[in-house]
Length: 167
Image (cartoon, rainbow, N blue to C red; front, side, top):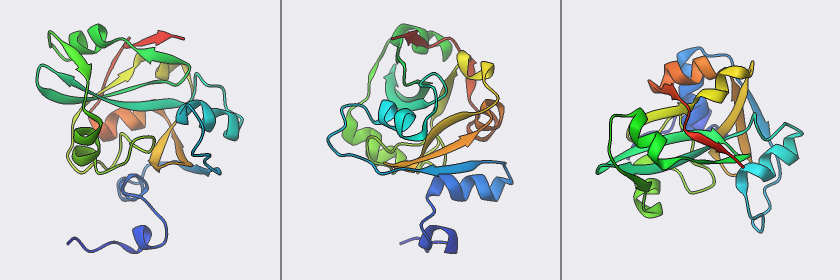
């Protein structure tokens, strides 16, 4: 079993540990998560008082047999065809939730694009570039991290592509 760093022991997550280790500027926002909430992302936007087009959800899809991370605004949905195209694939479907959790090391509603157990190809919706900062899961329900989209892309080796659909 891997030894936890002091940051993890004190409540940090693999995502915040990765950000700290990289020396990236970020802000953590915590809120009381309601397990009955129908949308983790919309709940986060409302709790933080942030526009839903600045809060991004992390989704895991299967593109031609390879798990791929898609980061899109919570105000919309993922365009699976656009995601497949962005990574040179033919077909995309949402990944099995158990496989997504096992591969990333996070639970649904708390999957972060950062600090995943296994690094996956990542595509960040192009709209993220229109905001000075965006919010993504910090690796736990009720915890978001705010950072620049360019920093997120650099840390995850993400490509920017128009993969989100307006809600």
